[in-house]
Length: 238
Image (cartoon, rainbow, N blue to C red):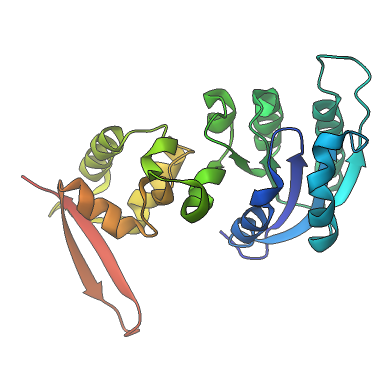
């Protein structure tokens, strides 16, 4: 993915804690440049007062949306309308939707239909329909595992066993005549099949150690003309 991809980060303040804000922006910076930073909520409510210092520190634009009707989330409507306006402006190539609310499932799907790259972020309580509607989904607890997680597997939706079998299948489908498959191809295919797949959910920072833990694959590295770069390949064990 190109580093200059422009992203709109839209945050549902009603469903996300301010403690994650730095992690959110740090994570998106791995994918591109943040063009829009907007957060939605009823800022007259005392429950959102903890956000105010973060808004100033990270230069986030707060969008006021009064809760006119009890039991209905006006914030969702404001965020969705803004997302469509940004989409039609042609100023971004991707969106980051930060919420644990399934109400944004259709929005994520609609943005993808228009060619946008959609990254979702939310807590482990996020309903699965929203997770799979995104190109990628990042669990906030996994991003903040040092502070918020005792067991990283608490946030896993796709079990390691399911991932293991998927990898075995992928290797069978795309390996060379000797059974070897580039690890980079494995990683890309896993994300397409499981938008919530992220090795940090399993307590790892890199894909290779995660593959080793599964104990079902042979691993080899191949030197390149650049001494700092090695190509990693895996093969199903007999």
